[in-house]
Image (tube, rainbow, N blue to C red; front, top):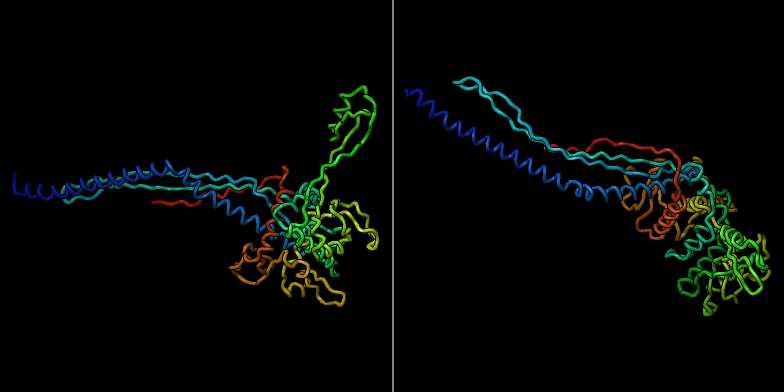
Length: 438
């Protein structure tokens, strides 16, 4: 072997060793990346659930509250409310890894071109959410929106953890024909509403409930609809028809009778309540018999224009509001910009002397929405929406308003979303996003 060939061999040997070392490192890196991709793929499903479920939950909660507040603000401006329900959320997660070698050639100093392979690896993750919306502006939705809450519904809400004064102020038009700002159950009235006597009496009732001197309860009652009559020749048919009419056939000593069972809501009064000044205030405001031990709770049984100086009543006759009326009512707790009143965008209520009526007298301790003109969302906002170039928001420190807002929202879900809508679905695929390459 000549000296030139020995020199060439001595030069090539370290470079060949270096190339082999690089190939080993590249192969090792590809193996590590492949293992890492396989490891991620094994736990990708559970991890995606951890990463997305609570985020979707928070997004649905936040947007539902904002949509509800926006509709209340719209009503204050005498505009039409509108709602979209999220009927479906489908989120397709995808994880893909790719390994490849790209060939290329290098020019050698002595032996021409040499082929090499450039390793390349990629790891990508994609999310394809699809959201389906259901418009809630069909005939059934509108009918439920205008239907007054039932007596049983008002009674049930009154027995929950919400104060009875909050429930009655929200959902009663009047009690024993004492008005609860009835003119506020629609678009903003021109004249100041009648509310003071109702508010005084309801606060007295709340004081009695807080002292556990009054208690709501159900009194099971039976009414004979027909009978008694002798043994009918078609007893089986009679029994079937009675069930269809929600009646009961009962055999007694005189014969058969048709019985209707009812659950009568009642208000029980503790005897010691008579010593509490709040009881006298409650009886005076609602013309109740101060000697009564129980009060029957009815709806629309008491005739209007009853004589206030006549016999004292032993019942509480309620006229309830619909959900739309309740939303109109609380919309008057919204602070509105003076320039919107001056421009006629928002209707104004006036006192008899022509001065502006302050709705905070009616809504005190119940509901208030603040207004501010700002580019940024107010930092102290619990729920906030932007409307007419202003932010309308509920202060997170206002516990009374937050409680009222929560009650209205939950009742709206029960009243409006308890049926299958035939309205077409609006499905929006949001496409592929969140892709990361390494």
